[in-house]
Image 1 (tube, rainbow, N blue to C red):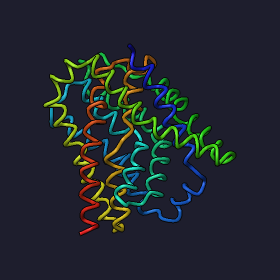
Image 2: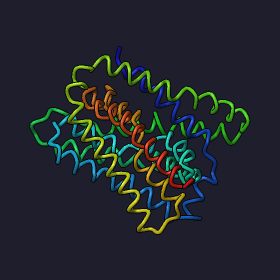
Image 3: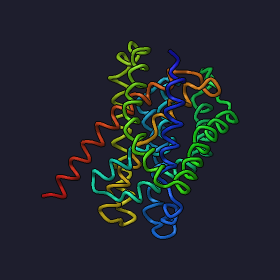
Amino acid sequence: MNTIFIVLPILTLLMFDLGLTLRPHDFRLILQRPRPVFAGLIGQIILLPLIACGVGHLFHLPAAFFIGVVLIACSPGGSSSNVFSMLAKGDVALSVTLTACSSIITLFTVPFIMAWTTNSVGTGTEVQLPVGNLLVQNLVLMAVPISIGLMVGMKWTQAANRIHNVLKRCAFPALILLATVFFLQHRETIIREFPHLGLCITVLILLAMGGGALLSWLMRLAGTERRTIVIEVGMQNAAQAIAVACSPLVFNDETIAIPAIIYALMMNVLLLIYVGAARKAQSS
């Protein structure tokens, strides 16, 4: 089974669901509280790809894995970060704003960052990136579903809430299905590379979370905002990274998607530990 036929519907539904939850006032937070919004966007858009490049070089990753690690790092924030922010008693409104803004901004930053990445891995690789195709795919699979969801949410609020309640229950099982199918198809490679690649991605996530905490400290943010920034910078949209890696219009290389699969696993484990620690610290 070609995983692209699983990941594309999942990504489209996730983006549509994100649009259902958005309202115009979510974007007003940029003007009302610019410091936490800028801290989160700097962490996601600038700091995280730089960390990924550094970690990729540190672990001497092969070209395909290096590209895959940078790809997940320059992807937008994952919609599940909103749930994690709520569980950590963070700033959910800030989380929603950052997820929405990063989803829009990365439509245009991902093609350029990935073009630079594929060129920087050297002439010894055959990996090619059609930047125009990637830009069009991002617009079709992300901008269009978000826009439709936003319009549905504004015009039919009650119906949008009912649809959202259904989709949010389906999102995690759908991602588990994707991960299971992908693992079965590439189990030998994943098992063989997991000790090295898994450690690399764990370091990436921990540094991203640490970077988010540092930015929050430099910006002198409140505790709820700090917890949200840590989660937002640490949780990226693995489904989009897999879609870009597997798409016949872009990389058409499932090996590049392997870091995103491992990232999705490690991301949830590490962020759940962080949420538990944050809740314990608040109750003590």
